[in-house]
Image (cartoon, rainbow, N blue to C red; front, side):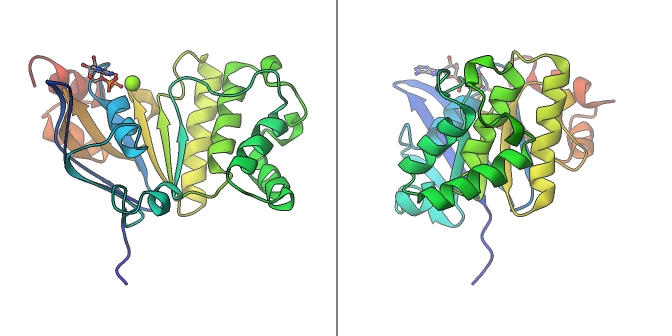
Length: 245
Ligand code: ADP
Ligand code: MG
């Protein structure tokens, strides 16, 4: 069987009522690749995530997760997906470990599997020592790391992160960026990371620059700079996202 792309989005169009916000959007992320969805506020990043997670249904275009069409095989497709939403969704009064256990139970994982998953995922994110702390006591960066660990509990092939570093201080941001790139380097996980912050991009990442609901440039940072005929990524970003697009 041909190896499927982890995430494949084909000619996706979407409107809120009469207001069209995504236009013929094409995007792929392979296993072991960190995809960056780079775009200013209002570009359509969260809308795209809402379609991938099936919060909203699309009429035009296709979305495949690990080869499964999300409309035709929703359960199989969504089983391959882990998500960290823009707003934190942890229970602040529970411990780190209780939050993860709760999620594992919802996924139908046995206690044994859940305990192993908690150990494995929290260790990867450098949070295992804090497993008995109440989430309310953790700083924003640590809370984010717990959310990432939680999203990986069921071993999805694709991890979506919607602006996970917004509101964090510089060291916490740096730690999250490092951890996520390490997760990708460790194995077959495919990441799609939405951001408007250019300093979160590594040279090895695959960037899709999105503006007003369309992909304006795609490739490694170098390719984007070249496509925009710019001097650096900041310059490319401003060139490609200024004006009417
Ligand atoms: P981003 O996440 O890149 O900031 P969004 O996907 O949130 O962008 O928004 C894309 C566009 O869709 C914006 O113009 C926004 O105002 C609009 N939008 C977002 N959510 C809704 C909604 N529920 N109803 C109508 N318009 C929306
Ligand atoms: Mg958003």
